[in-house]
Length: 409
Length: 150
Image 1 (cartoon, rainbow over the protein chains, first blue to last red):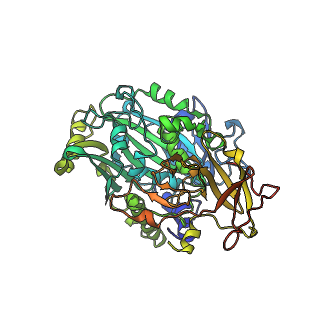
Image 2: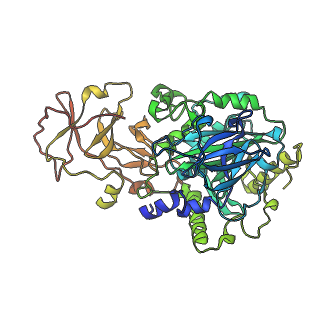
Image 3: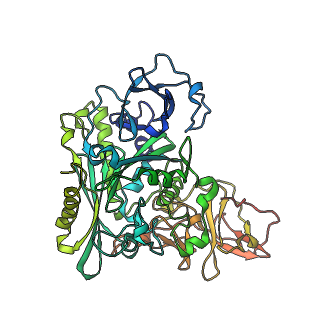
């Protein structure tokens, strides 16, 4: 439980808010490159409580500036590009394009360099980007991503699919080197030991599921400061996902799916996701207003939620159900929430650093050479219990050594 | 867990709850394959359900862990289970299991949702939200006191 004052401090992101000022010290995903079709020169962007427009300039580059907006427009409003009016004299934010996403820097001073994470380092052929709207505050969206225990419940499948049909789907692959679907591991071992370690990019979160026959399943996921996660999706792919505020009560997830060995099948990935979303705002078709297509019979026999097989919908239900801004004065965190507690401490420390003008103390800012920040390692492995640490490292090294692009760490 | 903590697990009870039995729903409302419905009474967001023994529970709607909506809970093991992390609640709102927490954890014993007494009479489901003990004579009010909307 935290106080209302602290909850406001760590959730609100408008200009001049404490957390908003921290987030503005980092590049923020602003739009998908897919959204700026053909020769279009303007695209509405709703980001960090500001009503903006992405502009293509004469040199073929991009900037983000303010657009005229009416106070009653929807949070994720996308006016026709022709009707967008630019605010004269508004701020102009720099924009760069990275692997299918336009990133904007909305903070003061020089924008930082990009770290050498796998998603930025892999060739374009090996990275696919998509996004989706969630109607809730960004922090509760992030917190479900740094909570390794929820996958054993919220994403529980009461029957296992053939892992051969798992392409592009989370948790449907075989678990590491065992001939056991990941869904079965999660279901049968629901009480992970969770270890959280501070790193130069954020947090390394290790979930250990001790299995029969002295085996341990090791799942390594990461929090990348301030609002991204990096997690394994399958043996072939990892997910890097930002939870980006539209305003205080809405956010987009932006995901880069990064493949180690084979190029990503972008057509399959895009089609799988477009059929669950509407354009142009990338709002999910299953949502609060239609009870996420909740089906009690399915909840009895197939999935834990009764909301279909797409785990994104499960997460969306969980985080939107907490309210537009989760009331953390009523929460009761347990030992399974260790990474959430640790992350909030990091965010509060960063808020203090910005307020006391010690910005060099922020993760990946100051004199840090971020080009040396690589990985992070995100994977599933199974090993005899005493060897889990080495086995987890080894599994990642093998994948990296067999990869056609330079994934060395 | 003391009374003050209990109150913090749910929405604040708005003033105005009478010292009489009030109608929370009709029995017919629960004559559905999965008898679990949301009920809002005097500002409290609640969930009304029938457990495996056929008994009724009227308990806080949001899981005390992080706040997930128990109207989508799994009706199993004679109670309601939160789909987020499996916390399990009985018809009195008592948390009886936290299956993601370490096996030696006894935290669940300290977690209880607000709950209200429920009786069923003449096709009505009645509850008491007033001060002290509910009246022994159960009188069915003519009008429902609540709207049951999700």
